[in-house]
Image (tube, rainbow, N blue to C red):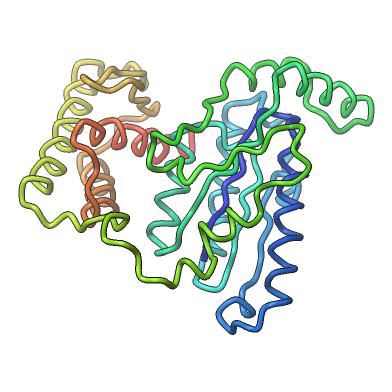
Length: 291
């Protein structure tokens, strides 16, 4: 069952919104006479439930380890009878894409709940929390504000996108429920709303060719920068840099990741001009999990 990804600035009230959603979901489940709904279980995964300190965001290695722990926790409970609320910063678009792929691999829908608050409002909240020994250190907090990549419903992995503003008393419960679980999900969709299977030979050819082009660039870069210990490399027509780990990546490992990406995306069409960028985002997450 669905994955709800909470995203927002630090100290924007994400956990408050997650708890509101959890309470609403549990109430609907307990009050339902529909066997499909009544058997659902709700899971809340956050830095707090995983015992992660806010200070990990000041250390690259610790943050990546924490993100890997969160991702593993989400993957473990994704299932047909489970609703998973991933209540974290989720500020990196590549990581949100990774969560989207995990939900897709589990044949379950996902959505983004963006908790919207101004930077100044978040600063004021964090100052109050720090007075209670429960906020982010100031330097880490400001760095996270700068690094935040806001969800964009133009990206397939960032939709459906629900924005909850700071002054909103509650999230749009009905809209979120209907989008990911509600009875409307059991109705046969209108043909215009169905993702059409990508059976066309030209799409599979593009998927194969463009991902192979990226791998060729990686291998060429590693050969030309031997002994330099990783680095960031540009990829033509891609807005993000490909981040290579310190140790060279072997051809078998690159091909394994390429096959995995193709398997995730071969059934539904990606826009041709987005294939390389999505593959780079995927590689950035997979290649840097343990660095």
